[in-house]
Structure formats: structure tokens, C-alpha cells
Image (cartoon, rainbow, N blue to C red):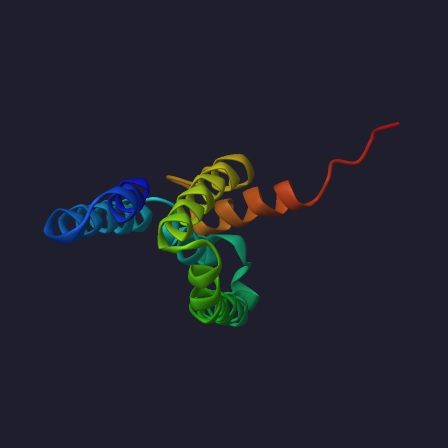
Length: 131
């Protein structure tokens, strides 16, 4: 995204178009194979089987509402700070998302659904002091 922002800020005509499109392609690809799918993937792991369907539907609804909010605020954001800075903001948000995922989401690779749910339950309930 920073590459695309640089293209918007410093280039014109065909070079600008090429650099922006390459930057967008890298951002979309990186986001899709990185933190972009995290919300969809964890829905099957976080929630117990008894509520998984309703919880996943609620999560999907929140995701789509957040997408709608970004679409609605984009024109005002673009007019206020310019397209290049909006792109820089998206890059910063992506870094924040990576930090959030790496800090707060436990690894569940190789675990069964029940084991993964147990990991999330253990993370959600603070340990009680003994004694």
C-alpha cells in the first residue's frame, strides 16, 4: 500500500497507474494470505459447537457492517487528507492488525475443533489465584 501511496504522491500518467496497480496487487494479495482471512477462519475455532452457527452469522454481519462503514467514510476521508494519505492509513491499519493477531490470537494449527475451542476458552477466562 505504501508503494501505491508513493505512486499517487510522486508520479503521473502511465507510470503512476502502473505503480499504483502493482502496489494494490501486493496489498490485496498480502492481506488475503495474511490477516485478511483471520476473522473468517477463527469463527470455526472460537465458538463452541452449540452456538457456532449463530456466532459465525453475527461475526459475518459485523464484518460486512465494517466494510460498509469504510465504504461510506472513504469519500470524506479522501477529501480531508488525500488519496495517498488514505493509503498510508490503510498500511498502518494493516500493521496494527498484524500486531493484534500475533499478540491476541493463539496458534491452533494441528488441533481438533474441540481442542481449539478449549484453547480460546482458557485464554478468555483469567486464571484464579490459588490459596
